[in-house]
Length: 254
Image (cartoon, rainbow, N blue to C red):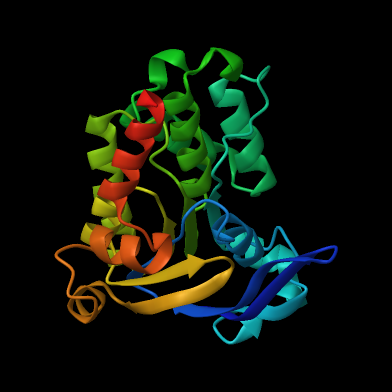
């Protein structure tokens, strides 16, 4: 079980995240939602061990990750929101670098990379520089890199960015299969329809605070909303999206 306990983060005097707590269990997918500026990505980076919280802790199976951060990261697969890669490396060179850092045996690593590049439709471009890849291709490389060492915990921050609709469906099924295999999955996305289909529970952030932490079904019932998107708009955005769209159009015509 992966737990966030009272996570709080300050940047100087500015408080970005306040007292955020949740838990993601093995075999389940927890959705983390929030509008831009809600502290969602900051929370994800703290849970990934990339950012130290000002207060609070992240625990895996009851142990603080700060006690053995290297050990925790060896059990973690992380797909960040922005695909920062080495543009001068080829796809296969980058994955070989990641695999060697993960200390995977060379024969096993080569076999996994070859198979995953084929499955992700990138085998023909494996020797091309990452700088020539499209955003969707770079996103696929990040997903492969996160899966190479068969991690116990997977954190996906906006993983569908740039993916074509066909592969987005494959990825959605992949995330479901990872949960079925007993992994801990934390999933953040602006594509609320996918979150609704994948996640049993969601955490919704607004201005750095938790405004909802519940099952998708109960949240819909509680808000008397027809969909997770409707409940999200009421809880996090706190505005009428149709009226806002009309107001913007009126301003454009003024």
